[in-house]
Amino acid sequence: MALGRNRGRDRSIDYWPGFVDALSTLLLVFIFLLAVFMLGQFFISREIAGKDDFLQQLNQRLSALTDLLALEKDAKAASEQRAMTLSATLANERAERERLQGLVAGTSDTQARIGELTRAAEDEKASATRALREVSLLSQQISAMRQQLQALENALATSENREKDAQMRISDLGSRLNVALAQRVQELNKYRSDFFGRLRTVLSSRPDVRIVGDRFVFQSEIFFGSGGAEMEGAGKDELDKLAGALIELERTIPPDIPWVARIDGHTDKRPLSGAGQFKDNWELSSARAIAVVRYLNSKGVSPQRLVAAGFGEYAPLDFGDTPEALARNRRLELKLTER
Image 1 (cartoon, one colour):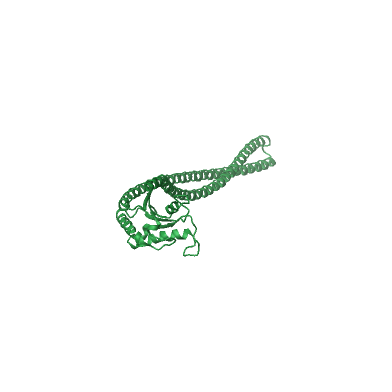
Image 2 (image 1 turned 135 degrees about the vertical axis):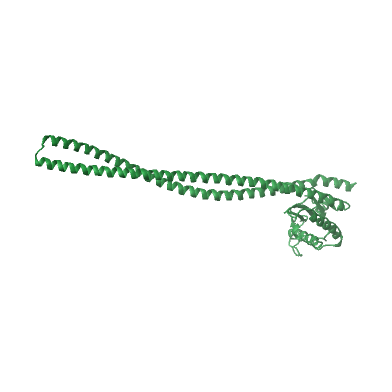
């Protein structure tokens, strides 16, 4: 009857580590996705930074061309004003010439004056012609600058389109990666369920092997003596069964699924003296987990599929101080998880 009551109390407490591990797994997946997202954002930021530099150079060149265009417009306006002034002067000179010819015809002085005025008018006319040619040249330069501005605008539009395409490709890559990860997680869960069922059948006859959430819990006394990390014969038979199940699992799961069998070592909260082989419970729990991993590897389990972790006394199942509570916390846990 006491054993039944203890088992009932175990079931009421044993679910919490499973929930914690499930949340930890979800957190790891979320962190991995966040890392991928940050990596994608990093490459996007680098590409956008390069685009910003290119746009800044284009804006500087556009500003310079705008200033040059303004100067050319001012020069064109000045030339047109000069041409208008020269045309007005030429008209006045022609009128003066006609008036002088009518008033002082026949006198040599008047003829000389008329000649000077004529030459002056011709000079002004030549100046006006040159001014018109300069205006035409400026118009051609303005047209060329407009073409360059149009080419720059086209280049900017092309750059923006490429940036949008890159962002769409990155978004599509992230979506496909999420789908692939979800598929891998589903596949691993399927094999984990099969493995869990087979191992439950193999180890169901052992009263000192318990199922807590998604892991198997072995009492440390099955494998090790008090305060030691040397494997004993009593627990090796159970590890042989476990090794066989893991080897069969390796043949079943596709090699591209990154799974591992993690062995976690735990101790009770009583401190070690420090005078023995191990300084503290961390070292003891880690050494026990490593000893189990090495034994499984010696039985044919691939080392790439094995992980050892030591938790010391810092992840207890029972927070009590009774001998039963301390014994429950001295344990080794097996969990099938992602690498």
